[in-house]
Amino acid sequence: MPVIDTRCSIAVPAAQAYAASQSHQHRRSWDPFTRCARYLHGAQREAAGVQVRITSWLGMQMEVAYVSVKPGERAAISMTRGPFFLQSFAGSWVFHPAGEHGCEARFRYHISAQPWLRWLEPLMLRYFHFETTRRLRALRRHCERP
Image (cartoon, rainbow, N blue to C red; front, side):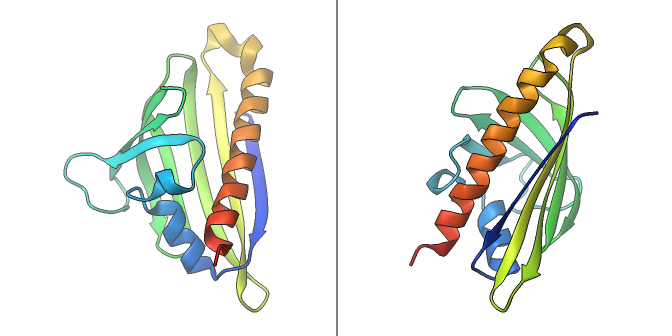
């Protein structure tokens, strides 16, 4: 399964960057990819097994379930339902302390196209890499603004 791995330094503590990344109520204020992200089935916060529906600005929808959560440090998700062109999608957002007051944020996604669309996978990887890099930069700007 192809992997997209992007990282950046953010000049705030890891727990603060993590909190901003997982706040689905405030995600629209910084995330250029996500138009809407909402917990399903009455969930109020991230936890293993909790499902979230994500709608992109392009209108694509995906439902994911948290697979693993360590508040302040990492969250991993796996697609339970998604756009027709994806066979599988999984990702993790990890925040490690770096320096005295900062952190390194790492977004890592595993994707695969439906078998009949595998020829498009290189383009899909470029698109998701572009979006992931853009999202990390936007998260950094959001976290570091005064």
